[in-house]
Image (cartoon, rainbow, N blue to C red; front, side, top):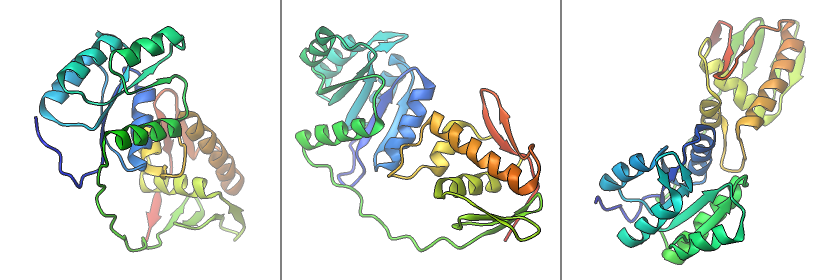
Length: 248
């Protein structure tokens, strides 16, 4: 198995067959400094573990091709890798069973993602410190000016201007979201992509939050432009800005 550099970020493998849980959770953990890989099955987990090393494994107990309790037991015997179990079962006997089989922690769905971050950090502290890569100080991003559908917007600003000079205030999250759409006009963006492109380490941005922010942004775009077709919902797939954009 490949060894991990002592200066790399903690490596986490998330094993869950529900994409709408797996991918947003991975995006959230990445924003908190973890190096995350994801798989949707026990088979995929074993294939990845054969070639890569991880510091912690986050394992759903109900996979389509394997029982999480048995997988946890095998992992414990095989490598002693720390395991945090995820389950919809809240019975005390299930929690005790998981811990007896070698799990380091146990989290019941639904859960707050920040709680998983805390539990991951706790497991890593018990297993020994993991040195993080030194953070590089990035220069401030240059301001970009966008024009679309008779509106003007500048990155980092909190306002949207129409052709008459009237402004509409945007929240910080709405401004980040709008800039992502302006950088990808006429392109379908899934909720997972929007989470990854807009979330910050101090935000809990998940599917329903994205939907609410898109809804608020859409209302403000309608109020500013008089058009209700700029931000299109593609049911089940995501959202798309339908406008030609110029930027400088």
